[in-house]
Image (cartoon, rainbow, N blue to C red; front, side, top):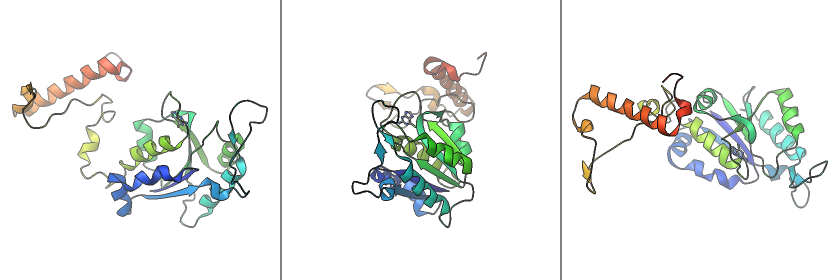
Amino acid sequence: MRVDVVTIFPGYFDVLELSLLGKARDRGLLDVRVHDLRDAAHDRHRTVDDTPTGGGAGMVMKPEPWGETLDGILADEGADPDPLLIFPSPAGEVFTQSMARELAGERQLVFGCGRYEGIDQRVFDAFAERGRVRLVSLGDYILNGGEVAALAMIEAIGRLLPGVVGNPESLVEESHEEDGLLEYPSYTKPAVWRGREVPPVLLSGNHAAIAAWRREQSIERTRRVRPDLLPPGA
Ligand code: 6GU
């Protein structure tokens, strides 16, 4: 998968060189390219924002640097003919594991990270006329810009790409996968730590009993902290 990111803070994305996704990049499974929006701001101060038309607080990102940068990405040789443009925004649809799964099937994602009070609406309108554009939110709280949201989405999507996670089984048992319940609690050695024992069933060797206990724990935890995730009637 190819991922392009447009931002005024390219340094935020340095972390994609680390860990699992860094290895995925080294192995050619994930091709991430970060573009500095200010490279397309041609005045002496490399200005990317201006005051909101109609008045109000804060600043709005100007359309011209976005237009030039996105045009360049779409025209790049090696670009996909139908990439998906994603603008992280608290005004967007909420990002979920099922959206991550859907997006993991794309050939090219382009993340446009806005700052300030947002991006001039005409950028969304112009690119929605030429291709696919989605506004996507991480949830109901406010970040200072789209960078951290884009990082979270790239990690959630990237780990679902074929070959990125060594053992595909570990993708299946996690929270929000399969049955949509939260994950059960995990334990390792030692069997007693600071006087606390591992639940004895886990040491029983009885695989059916272990599976039943884990399922019960998942349901109980989900009922306690995320009852909205329980299937109707559960
Ligand atoms: Cl995608 N962007 C910003 N700025 N804040 C957010 C968000 C995105 N998702 C939740 N809060």
